[in-house]
Image: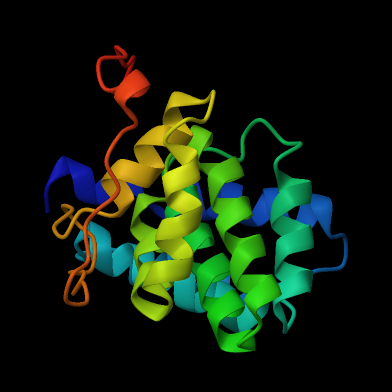
Length: 190
């Protein structure tokens, strides 16, 4: 196992559990708690999938309940780093599961808020795959966003290949989001 695989580890899962219970007292996360024991020997992508699946099992049903918990968790400065990758995939998964365009658009907004704490680049790919025109239309507006992390979410999240991410099969005629001319040479701290 490489060092990158350890970015999602039992300590990270314990901290995520603490944060989520802190914003939703009474929330029980037994599958998430057990997931800590399943991480050893797994690659980073598999670790993310394990934690994501545990969250999908434990968190309340429906998109809006998950959105509320995630947005409330943003008040905790510890809610950052690699623990966010599986959380972003839960957000997109629940939005897509609902089939609602309102939830789809809300999930894009939530990803844009989370991305400054790690990235939503991995999760946004599921939204692109489901409704490419709608996702790209929103992402194109992000290329002029004040936050460089949101601009990066637009450009990097729409790449056909992104390390550790699921491969994105873009529809015919699809073009990834490009930085706006005014943003092309903006230095990045990342």
